[in-house]
Image 1 (cartoon, chains in turn orange, blue):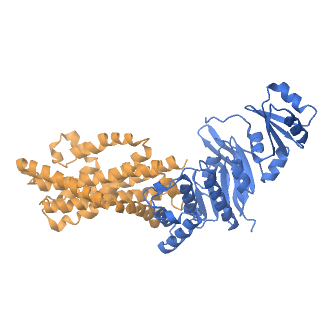
Image 2 (spheres, rainbow over the protein chains, first blue to last red):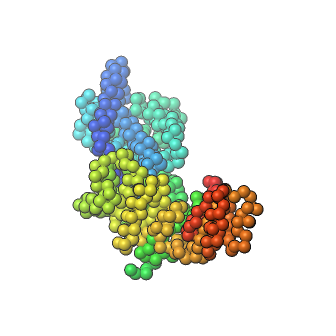
Image 3 (cartoon, rainbow over the protein chains, first blue to last red):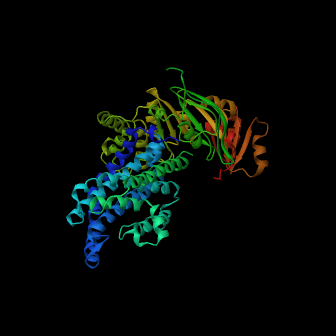
Length: 259
Length: 306
């Protein structure tokens, strides 16, 4: 099993660059989605719901929600890229197969996809940061910029598991399991809309094992006046999801393609 | 031309679970030739090709490419691969496909762009340079696949059924291009189940079936070794009795395929004369070809995909 140290950066970047070129062609539609969706969420829920709720966890609901939406959007972007887009390239278009006839290895292809998915999270997350800023969802500008590298880490953490699911998926329909069993529960129970203290104890424990909880725990304090606790724990959890996901995904993809 | 050995395989095997699809093959391929792997559907050609280019790990045996174990992905710098299924990038234009592919080899943009233009010229695709891949015909896509496989200026090009599904014009154009690659000193390995293609292009042929090598040699040597020089294909005969009567006293080996009797002989003139006398018969007299060798070696039964 080839691990990270043996990856050639130029090879990983070649895969990244190919995906970037495709993205660049559709940049307008893509950016519209990146800005538009969170804008609507923040407007609809942040203002609308915020009016009734007022404060949540000690801060205005708009600020509370903005950090949550930023994280869930980073999750969604990396997940979609790691599922549908990567699966199309791996299974439908034969793009990976074509690349494997060049000096690139499967581990480098998977790493390139991982970094690309995180890059897309970075793009959409940064878009939300701007929207949130405009809507008054950011309280502490001094630390808000630190969120940018964190978004990238969040992207990696969700791209890893998504690529694992892609590598074992027989078809696109399979992804619905992942959404229903993993993505939607995280969206609802990991602190995006309300603090996880509101959950029963066992559910809180469960939520502590999920990457979105740790993403929110990192991002929210950086954007608001809430105190940041245990940042290294949160980063470690996210990093672990990324690395373990990557290792399993490249192993499974090798088994699938190099038969 | 040097006589260096490009590919060396010894007791090469591939097993998928219980099923062995490549069952211990031994062969060497010298540099500068076009080497054909022939076999019916399911003979193990594609699996063998994937093993040759390192895209299918070998189960056992020894295999070297340019004298190195193929697990070393950097060997792909010297290798061009044209798989059976085209995997051009639908998101890019014709030219961009070559550019993006060149980037995987670490070729800088200026060199890549210049080479892409040359290769599009070579593939007669210059006028389609800016078009979407999806607008190309089957023959053009194949040519682009071949052009793409040349982007790293490889020493060895491996093509899996390069002309399957193409019309005769498209096929001839590809044959011509492949021949010109050979004159440039490239080594070619191709699989095909078109005997005509093998005869046109290949210096040496290996006939494969059920994962085993049935024979190998030059097209001429194979014909000489396995079949008589002349063939008369006769239709319109009813039953063994009639063919017995037709061939009586002549030295003829015969086989029935569907409704046609294939009669093989050193000198077919007497048989041809008899056939001409019978107005109920339709017949063709021709020299023996690779197709006859192929059918003799691999049997005449229709292959069902198992």
